[in-house]
Image (cartoon, rainbow, N blue to C red; front, side, top):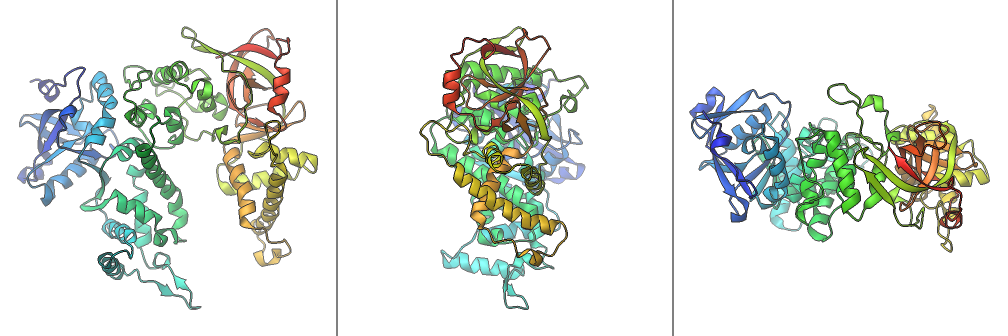
Amino acid sequence: MASIYTEIQLEGNSDSIRILELAPLGPSLSTGVLHGRLTRAYLHRSPDYTALSYVWGPPEFTHSITLNDSHTVPITETLFDALKELASDKANAGGLSLWIDQVCINQTDDSEKASQVQMMSRIFRQANLVIGWLGPADTDSNEAMDLFRCFSLNTSSPEKTELGQDLRHRLKLEWTTDQEGRSVNPLEQERNSAGLACVAILYRPWFKRLWIVQELVLARKLELRCGSATISDSQFFTALESSEWKGRKKVGSFSKPLTERISSLRRLRDDLLTRNELLSFVSLAHDFQAWDCGNNHDRLNALYGISAWKNGNNSWFLPDYSISAMDLYYRFAEGYLKHTTGGLDILRYAGLGFFLASHLRQSNGAEWTCPSWVPDWRIRNRAKTLSFLGPFDATIDEAFFRVDETSKTLKVRSHRMDSISNMPQTIFSTTDRTIMQDIFALSQSYTGKKMEDFVSAITTEGPFSRPGQVSKQDQMVEAFKAWKERQERLEYVYAGHDESESLGVPYIPDDLADHFAAMALGLFRNRSFFETTNGRLGVGPAHVKEGDTILFIYGLRTPFVVRKCTADLSDSSYILMGDCVVSRYETYELGRARYSSSSYLHREITLV
């Protein structure tokens, strides 16, 4: 018998998709089998359907759905749970038309998968409703969903006020006072599990899945569903911004990272709907590097729809499952260089200095051989790029590059700047507290002018200022001093002393110290501190070493660290390690030096 996908074929070079008409819950469900009908539809005809956004889970197809009376299609447990809940919902008694990737796409056909992924921006944008399936209900999930709805309410109308008071009373979330008469947020009450139940909702896998980024951002109407409990996206986002939620303390340390992650989706959605220019594909891939996906190809494929939605298909890059992930990353980098205005900017996301190659292998155990100038999108803890630095340019020349498609090398024009001579600190930690402690310990080694160099190296205001630009170095030194004095108090407490004994340290305004801390954290995380041969200080990729070269690549704003492939001085082949910042280098210095006739200072190099 022909498969259901052969029977309901998609037409090539068209906007055809398949729609699942899910049958209502019936007696057959007791056998563990769902029923539905698969049909063909065309997006240009604006079909009515709901798109399901969910987590596939482990690739174990332990359940199935019977389609068109005679075809059995295996599905994962997570999808079975979602369909069972939807089929049993009385609101869907007349059936429900769904688009679900696991059922509506022939998962054994790489060509069809790639073609449908290219249309996902339209599929989710045109859906009447997108359901974000968080998973089945558990003991406290209904309470948590009610609480999120409660937090979304305000006093703008009597009806909302009345409902909010009812929910607060029913969930026992009345504000109380402690023994000293101070108000206590209901989420802080020891015996109240509602706050932790909300945190548990945020920790569900759906909120970490890379594919949901485009599915949520592009949805015209979104509903989050946990078991039978639902909440609209506007209610959910409003709840996360409410004073009741933000005012918590005990549950805050668990939920703050995820709350910020989810809020970033709302900002991205708002930006996408209001801006006319195309969002940077490469920036999206970097910003969402820590999100989960089960296929290395999907580090790019899963974000394609957002990038392509405003301007149609990005002809320079299309999702593809027929080639290796490594080849897909190379094709993406090559296309970005040749066909976008970003050009060499993609090098800011590349470099082998941000991970140990031995830690990242292909699924078969073989070494990953992607060129160093091609971003490896499997890396999930890449350091923040240095594009957040102030308005400066490392070079004033236009970009020059040439890709050799046979050797997969990249030729660029560069200017040698310095080299790394000493590594006082290797790799900085990833947590805020340990990074601050590392910086504090390192700062003890530098005083006077050296301290100013140190501040210049680790902040965005000092280095690379343009001629005539008002320097903010003095202000940054003051911010550094404020932060250092506050850190001295904290170090005293970390050592086990009573904070009240450290009152001899003067109080420092938080905004001044916080300004320095925020800038330093953004720069140091997953990076290393170094000294150069010319006596300057810098911050660069985590895995650089003494002897690595620091150079400018013409057309880029920051310097880069590279490593020679051989000891032969005539060999111009280098491995790109990554971007860096070095103190006390200014544009006009390079402007004078770049005209030197010395090929040692100004030459083309090959990045391998």
